[in-house]
Length: 54
Image (cartoon, rainbow, N blue to C red; front, side, top):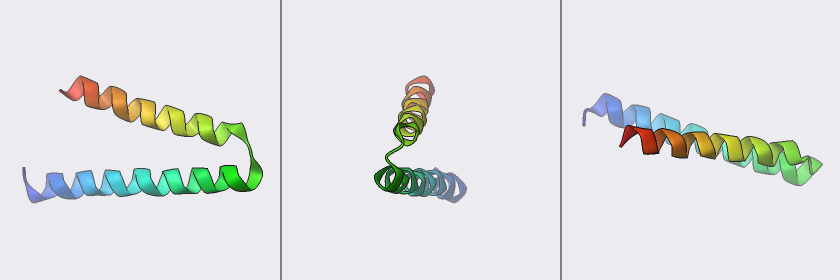
């Protein structure tokens, strides 16, 4: 694995963690169910991509 691949994976992981924190924080403040739906879609897409890449 090259350094660039590791940097790209780290960037994706950091982006997903930041997006999760932002959506959960927004859900706690506004109690809009759309934020949880967005999280389910994001993590579903990640799971689907990881299944297909193996």
